[in-house]
Length: 225
Image (cartoon, rainbow, N blue to C red; front, side, top):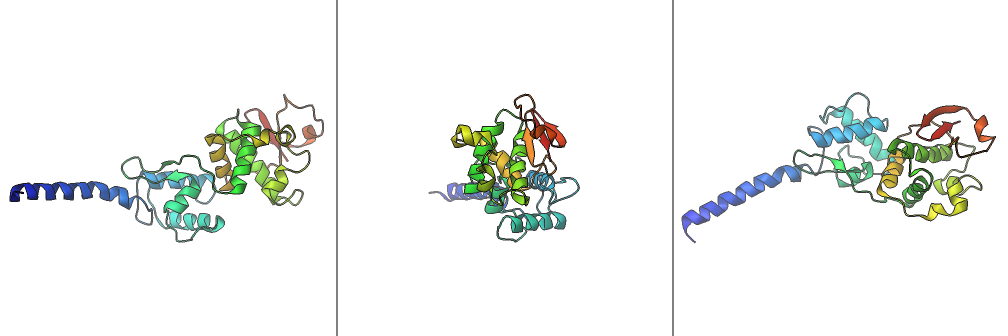
């Protein structure tokens, strides 16, 4: 191999490594990071109530504190950085280039997540994304209430609680939208503002449920306390 050709190959290798460097660096977000990945993470933290203000794409101390709070709540290693494990729990995929963080392909992260996804799919697959998150949030609000069982499975399988259990549709395989909606609810997004009940007024003749105080309506469902 000539010296000239060898030098050309070396320069090509250096150029390739330089091109790959940003993607490698994008695998972890931390204080000082900026760009689309940070913006996407901030939007989710704001949506779930961990961060206030706007998503400015700059990873500062406020974002780090919000990430720490998210990690602690979800049993993750609390280092204030968004690496692969934290990104997966948030439902984002970190990537290099201008695309930044993108919505992760739907994946189940726990048995509770799987069951909640099945409930969402059975009860609300025809609703908007926000409406599906809202249905999942009702389940979690019940878990937190002293008036209901204190586990997701206990709430869902409580006698007479959900029609999808009695008709067997709870066993259907959830789609990616239901899986993501359940994860957003698990991470803290509650479009209902704390509601414990929901129903479709056009599809039920239950007189008792209509006595509950409606706080919001999302799609075909009325959400009540």
